Image (cartoon, rainbow, N blue to C red; front, side, top):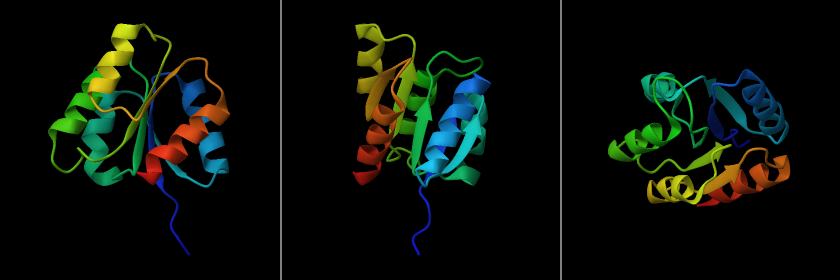
Length: 124
C-alpha cells in the first residue's frame, strides 16, 4: 500500500487551515499545518512534506519569504509549492512564479481548482 503524500499548509487564518485540511485529507493526503512561514521553516526537517501550500501575507515570515528560503536550501529546493492569496496583483503573482511556485490561486478559490493544482504539482 502506498503511503499518502504529505502536504504542509501554511496560513495564519485558522478557518483556511481547517477547510484545506478537510478537503485534502478527504482526497487522501496527509496534512500538516503551520500558522506562519517561520513555524514552517523551523519544522521542515521534521515534516519533510511532498508539497507546500502557502498564503503570502502572514506574520513573522511571509509566504514569499518562505518560498525563497525553501529554494535556497539544498534539502528543500525541489519541494513544489502552491501559493494562495487574496493579493493577486500581477507583481505578486510574478514574484511567486519567479520563486518557482507551481500555481498561484487567488482567494477565494474553488476547492476543485486547488485539488487539481495539488495533483499536478505532485506528478512532477
